[in-house]
Length: 90
Ligand code: SF4
Image 1: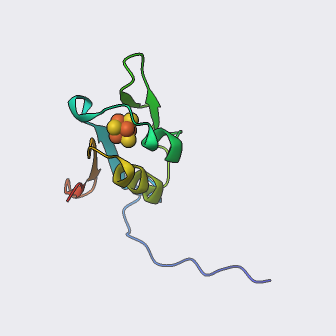
Image 2: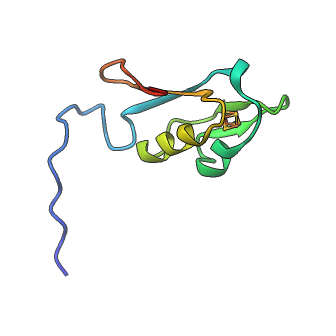
């Protein structure tokens, strides 16, 4: 077995894998469906009002995106921290 070659990535030191996307929950849109919690429990939790809160950004970007895409009300916004661009919802 040989080591996999590491693919070239963006040179920014602050953008390690899984740190490129920032998630935010729009509280007024959240209906507590909890699919985000099921997909990314390290990132989302329901609070006492059954609304999702972000407890950590420490998850792979793909999982953050998947969780956001699973939200039935598009209450999760994903922003690219490097560019400030909104990645989801489009
Ligand atoms: S999936 Fe959307 S509606 Fe459901 S808890 Fe998460 S943010 Fe709220």
